[in-house]
Length: 268
Image (cartoon, rainbow, N blue to C red; front, side, top):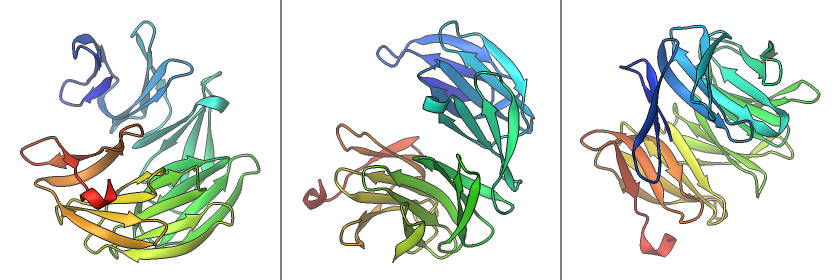
């Protein structure tokens, strides 16, 4: 397990079975986002207010720093040995070729890109300043703008049902995009200001976290409606689903760093 320690300017490596600290690896500056390429055993770490990307060798735990430009989010495409770096204050993405460490730029449609996800050959990027998501064909470099709700900020992909779900911070809704047609096929209102989203592809449920409203909404993607709005003790700002157990966890600001989201029994 790799944990960004922003105060210590390092990444702490834990044995996830024993919880023992294996190593503490210095980074180029203040570590922020982490992404792991399990195929190449490389760990990519962005650094806030820095143009350096820290790359940790998972075999040796040794780090090198590479000048790539600033990055606020990282997406690894392991099968193609590519890493996509997103910077909030930009209108493009940085593409890092893992085999050569060379970088190039990909147009993202508009300024202030925020969320990033990949489904098949297409990259999806949200534009927090408006109401669109850009779909980028990584093979043909074709860019398509898809209308969504106001201020789309985060994405979740359902590869089994070929869908992309978007949390819209501005108008308190989610948008469901059919990735085959590139069209928003339905929208559901959850209220508040949702900022994190996760999908359980097996149970066909989408979870939406609203940090300000201290709640997580549960949406049935087949019925296309909100099933429940669950209160959370803290302020949930990120979500994760265990694909084997279907347990849902929220990272929270509050007395506890995370909470398990317990859906009503009828939804379990």
